[in-house]
Image (cartoon, rainbow, N blue to C red; front, side, top):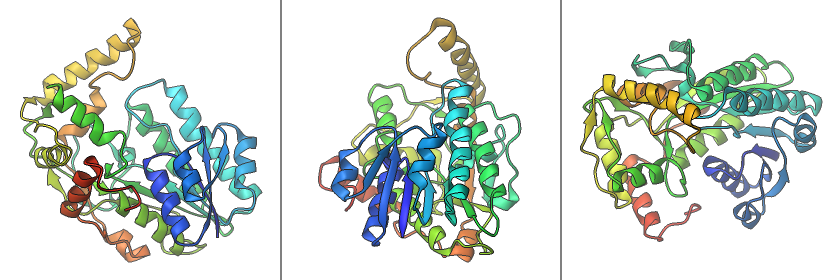
Length: 336
């Protein structure tokens, strides 16, 4: 098949492109920039912005499927910037799929679309958890809108599915673990609460595998068509244990200090006010949304994904940590 991956230059995007190419597909990536890593894989690249409808229409032409992975992520920024990338961009992808008669659309969503302040999600499937209300974080709010539009677009000519991988990590990650390690080394990393809240994560190979399996199963009327699925390793760990395992794998000191939720929430509120007021650079170290996420249990049932498209994680946390440690020493490549 000829498959377009939006955001193929990112962490998950590169894993998707590599895996699809290994499976014999002809892969094209739609990115804002150009990536030598994709060129080395033999993946074609088109530069463009998701908010540019004509650019998206051009990229989708001739495709048999689209994996819409690109998004503006993060915990900070204007709502409009998130809306343009995540909502307008997704609308453009859906419209282009219809105009170019592409029959399959796999959308990379996030469990954050179900966020409710300090409301635990423990062992539930996606259809058992409603969308969050009054989502304060622009990322979560705009991804929720986009996911609902993707699922609403499912019909007899365009089959759609949304996957919600939780906290993707592994070799090649330039965001999650490196930022945690940087804060740990500088003494600025804290647990919110006592760190006993269980959370799910997803090793990078498993996140990519879920996309491939959903793509293979997707068709009009298929069991997964028009539905959303949580994706994880299915190995929930207490937050304290998880963070310290990841930090140990990259040679960073463990996190030991804690903040109460009330204190963290107040700090987040202050940061949200001060950053735009003082025009401070970068993201604030804490937001109210992040404080809520860090202290709340979030782990999910993988049964619907197993039942509807055969997803079972292939790389456990222990094996993933071995690979991450080897990668941090330069012994493991992203394609290894």
